[in-house]
Image (cartoon, rainbow, N blue to C red; front, side, top):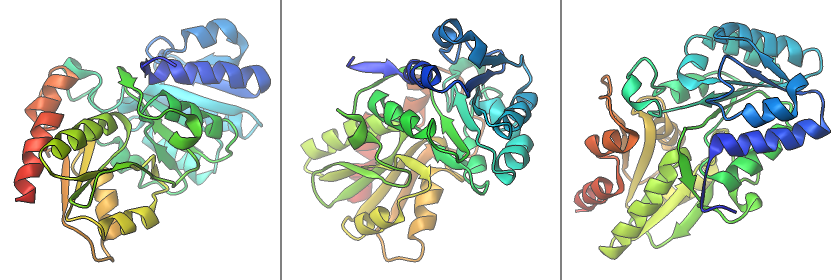
Length: 313
């Protein structure tokens, strides 16, 4: 297993394997097979790929129709457009109609970097997790992606999966440890009871690096990988919240409606530690590379270590 991998390439690999066994499994794209890393799938299984062109709304509705005809479609489209332009189709044709459609939002978060706010998807989690009967995921590395995909190709429930563009470092050493079932969060490691860092997807590796830096300063952290944002592991969050002095959520998303909001909502009726939500502020995010933007908003490991040290004081 490589030390790091692009999530889209891992998904493509799993799609090829699953499609070779199940001819009802289809990839539906909106002129995005290249950016979705689906070119190998198109070559290997050309009859199982449907190209809709730049028509995200049609892609979702056609996928819903295919699902009601016994097919198992996966829709691949940029997350910013899939969860904005076609959100009514996601709500009505997929979730409300209980259509077995998997929505893969590619280039999520700040992945499109310098293309600016029109291409950033920093509200997609708030939107999708508010839609009934729609599962929401953000895989954090290749092992978790493989485990998630092996579940999704067998599941009959609609789901939204947000992935980024860059290669992510390995966090898990096996698929079963990385993804056991929907709504089962993981404690990656536990260095003590000072602070719990809660993250998922691309920010999970930032949480891990931050925890290591904090540990060197004598601040003992737990790292919680939510694994799935919906369903959410309320039981684990409740237990962790009673063990630490501070909870910090870290997300590549607006501070409204995302991971921080989900954790705060889950713990609202329980006694728990104070919660600090780290994410993008309520403004149009600056243009730049992902690393530059993360550093600007204090979301890199070094900045987070300083901020958490101050909060602990």
